[in-house]
Amino acid sequence: MSQSNVNLSSGLKIFRSIDLDESEEQVKAGEGVVFSIYASNTNASARWLKLYNATAAVVVVGTTAPVATFFLPPSGASPLKFDSTVGIQFTTAITAAATTGVADSDTGAPGANEVVVLIGYA
Image (cartoon, rainbow, N blue to C red; front, side, top):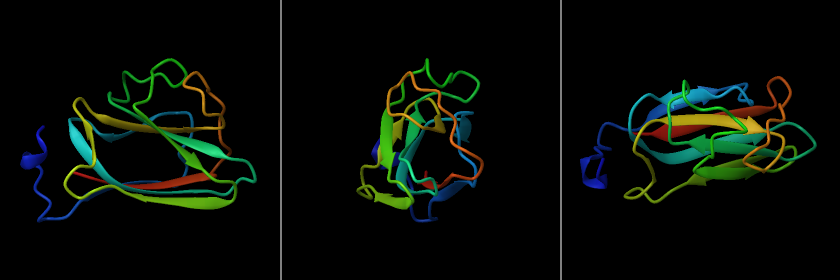
């Protein structure tokens, strides 16, 4: 999908999870572009948001390498907005997960409702 094919005039689609963890969740089943992320972490320790360029059926957290990893500060939030003409492009699908460690191989499970995420995509 070239950036020129992204029509933002009708607004972004929203993916929302109030319990993102090491069990991957599919944001979009096909190619797309992520333009914004708002993620919060209620735990006193850092958590990590990971985005994958694959469908949820293919992603194995701890084995599949994420294309983007974001730090979620302890007891805090991370609002991220990308350039409205660029975003982060995913050529296959968009899948998200959260873990307790930064390593691609990490499978640590955040507790229930620790990581809340809102992803704006097209």
